[in-house]
Length: 100
Image 1 (cartoon, helix red, strand yellow):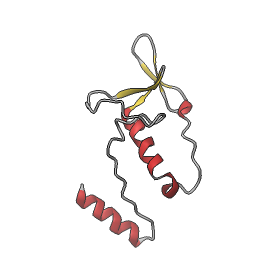
Image 2 (cartoon, helix red, strand yellow; image 1 turned 30 degrees about the vertical axis):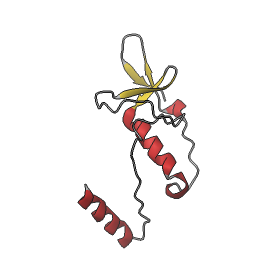
Image 3 (cartoon, one colour; image 1 turned 90 degrees about the horizontal axis):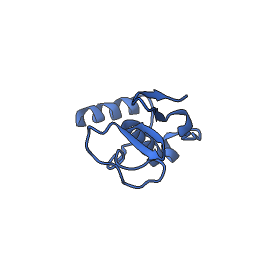
Image 4 (cartoon, helix red, strand yellow; image 1 turned 90 degrees about the vertical axis):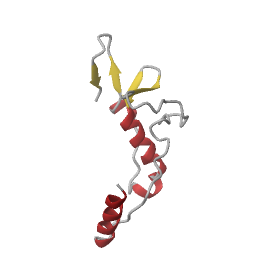
């Protein structure tokens, strides 16, 4: 992974793209709405409940937290993290569907 990061940094500088390293520690355990560290680090937990009745994939939760860390630098325009478009809704028969 370290070699890949070095390669990515080299290639981005070559084409004049800014490159930033982000410390992703605790981003999968942190609730993306409240910023509290409440989730287990157990990898078998793939879906987390970020608010009552609102479930998202733990990787999406982590990606939102990483995006929030670098929002001032990374995004060239203001993005609204509207979770209404990307949350999982768990139905009674335990099937998961994405609400869009």
